[in-house]
Length: 471
Image (cartoon, rainbow, N blue to C red; front, side, top):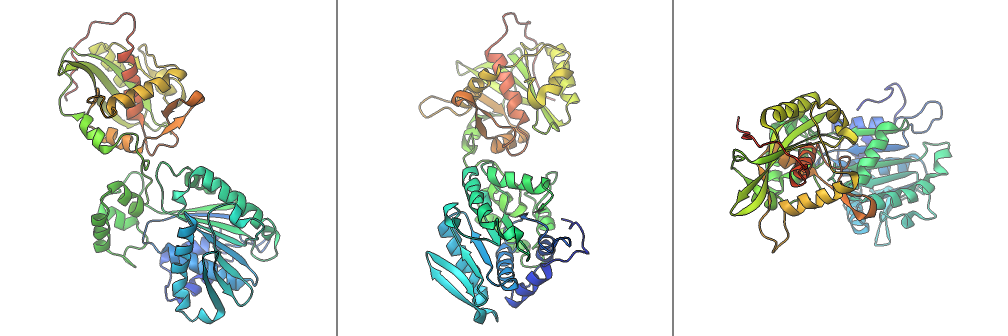
């Protein structure tokens, strides 16, 4: 989080003074974020950043930051129009009234009137400025003007809701961008979301890429453990200020869902709110048994969306309780691509699978090109059929019997299932979404490719050989 130029004028100290007057002095991260978001372009005298996206952990002081920013802008320019919204209209109103309470109990109370009506929840300042709550809809801002729009808890918004909201904010700010004072700004503030938080993800990408936008992004890095309390404490900007280790442990005790704790306190995106396969179904499908010797099997390999991570999986056909079932086992997974191709080649030469499955299109294309053995994959149309077949086998509907796709336990495979989401393709088919899944789903894609091969064997197969993956 580095400003373009600390020598520029910034309105951050003004927000800090408001926070102090409200009896809630800024923590260092809040002051630094206000300094960056409040930078002024010396060429125009207006705010440099039109869009500010801030993602930060729970209990980090987001509420006072919103309040200080809204009050400061209201006082800085008479007749300003400041807007606040959250995930629903009811949430926006409740949050606004809770946010306004410190202002009512501060020395600033005489300079504004608090309106509590459901259709008129606002702080109306005596200089003509208004700081109002509104529902997160385009229509709520129709015909209005906006100098500052604060969008809270945006991880909850669907893409359609977020796009509709921005379609209301943009016209409201049009004339304010050209004003000779400060100009308009939109601040999106949230913890990271789930795999369903497409709109927030898109705004994060926008803030990262556009020159007149900035991203302030806290949280535990991807290469560190987001469940470790010491690690969370090291990256939580409020730790040592308004919260301590006892508070973290209490939060974890109160939150039975570990993924939600990680999302809230490590600020790491988690899987879908409605996972493709429930933890209970994965537990049912997970077995400790090794793949029997002599089983017919196929090998699958895949690479993650960003081409940084690969996985190799075998799927074997076995008889269990007089039924034909399939067992998937992760041979290996990790950073890189070349090693995966070498591993598939080695397995093929030594153990003669009935086939190798790799999708040559997309991220796994480089892996496919590196193979020296023959390989195949479903056609683009068949990927949807293969996906539905895989899901039906691993988590059959009630009354359809036990799962017919079983998994040997692997931490990476379990993480991939937690983060995996689907996308809709032509004619209503469903396929795994590499882009919108949380983290790599290479293990699942490799499983899918191998399962397709073993359930659609080539016309001629080599004689099966030993396929024990132990060691």
